[in-house]
Length: 113
Image (cartoon, rainbow, N blue to C red; front, side, top):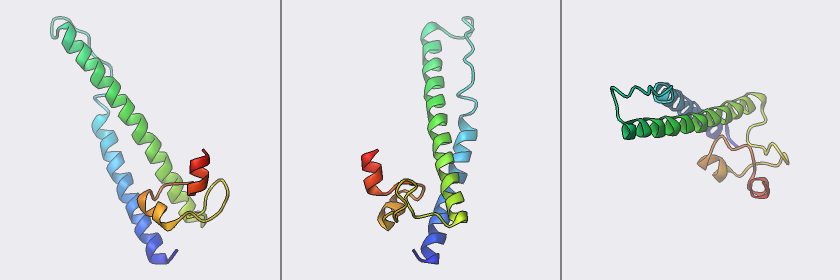
């Protein structure tokens, strides 16, 4: 993998990281506790609020997991291990890295998983 390709992937990972951090900040309030004040909202409104809360919590979990994957990929770049499968240590296909720069596994190991 050329230095230019590596820098392009690093830039894509860093941009995606910034985007995820912004999304995490935006959903923090939605994932908080639901106020169950019957004077302000009816039963269906509370059910909707609880459903929104669960969706926001699930989105936060997914985004946090993605952030961990991105940070791990950036760490592999720094250590020189980026582009190699973390399981079998064979090179990861460039096309696969182009689709998901944070992927830690080659196609065969991902399929076996």
